[in-house]
Length: 227
Ligand code: SAM
Image 1 (cartoon, helix red, strand yellow):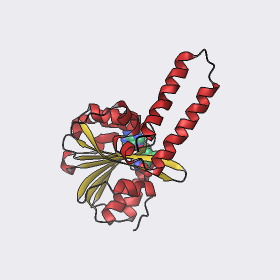
Image 2: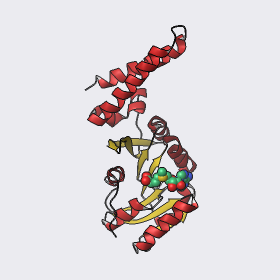
Image 3: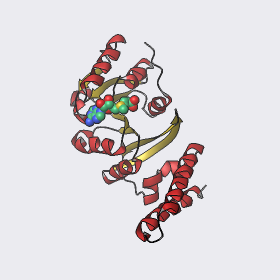
Image 4: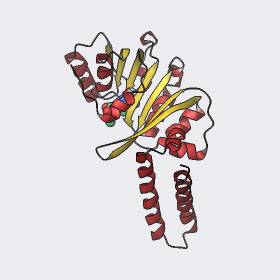
């Protein structure tokens, strides 16, 4: 069975180390672990799902591909899908909000000690996720930003380690901010234009709100002028 991954999941897959033992949390159809096993990129995987419908979809995909030996599908909340005997060393959590990803990691902290790499693809609140990672002994080792079907997605790759991040790093991403890719520039130029419109609509006497928005605009301009 060949699975053609979306561009977003292909980019996520590119950060999964060769020979990994993977837990994919919120796997839905299990497309990511199936594609990685078929490509020979990973040794084994657990596809975790907390909702019955997507869990059944994952069971069906793995079953139709005849991959039950390589991929275990478990109905479980977050990192509870992982058992010590799985020897998981890499976790992917994709397609959820940044806060939910941070909550899943936080709830499963006890399970994380043997895991070498986290590949995370938040749909929003990337800043909250970066804050959780640096506050809990993770260093961001790579980042990516991509666009697919008119939506932008960020990918954050983290490994155990200490890292000091500034507020600008937390908001914009330490690597993304340095790389200044065209998609990154587009994202923040649009955000800046939205904030400028919002500022123009706020009456002059609402000083606090105006000042908060002005600071956000200033931060964007500072980062966009770094290149
Ligand atoms: N990871 C796939 C992707 O990126 O295409 C599917 C993303 S889908 C939008 C999010 C999935 O995460 C849903 O199937 C949902 O049931 C599952 N999910 C949400 N919270 C979860 C949790 N705490 N544990 C396991 N799965 C969860």
